[in-house]
Amino acid sequence: MMHFDELVQKAAQALSESHIPYVIVGGVAVAAYGRVRSTLDVDIILDLKPEDVPGFVLAMQGVGLDVTPADVLDALRERGHFTVFVPGSEYRLDCKGAYSPRERESLRGRTRRKLGKTWVALDSVENLIAHKLLFGAEHDVADAETVYVRQKGLIDGRRLRERAAALGVLDELEALLRRVERTAPN
Image 1 (cartoon, rainbow, N blue to C red):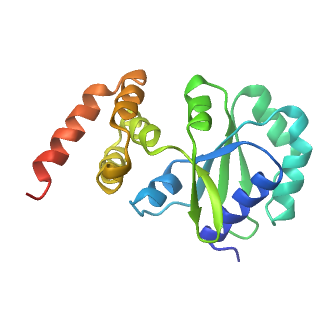
Image 2 (image 1 turned 120 degrees about the vertical axis):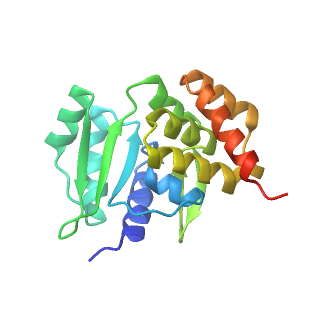
Image 3 (image 1 turned 90 degrees about the vertical axis):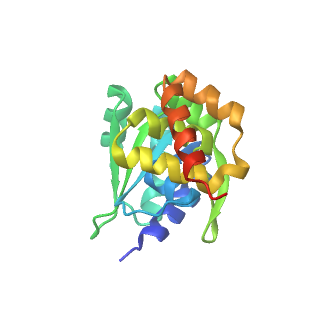
């Protein structure tokens, strides 16, 4: 059975070798930046066009993953998401195209980071924090705060504020910053 970290590495390697622009967002990106939590899926935004689908499907099948061309094409046409399954496992890739300006910004701003033996494309820290604040559930805000604290020295504060303002969560970011400053050791 494929382990979760192996799934992330194999998917990233297959996408890179297929020259399909992608970015990993969500829980895996949060874990890479410092807040390990359980998840069964890898959330991926892809710059995938209908003509890329056969190569994408072959790449996924080549690393032992299960997806059908029809599912991918339907998702692209409907501007929805599709699932790539790991046979015999609860793990999966939850994929979607870069349909909106927010998703295209995640692709543009992605960073490369080594996870295990593989370089993967992750959402930028600034974009990840702003999106987590936008989603706004308690665990999302906790994710944003932990990532901020763990990556503080590497964060571009101006860019973080720009992303938060663009997503309409500047007040939430300021509240997060106040909480972090209150709890920071002296």
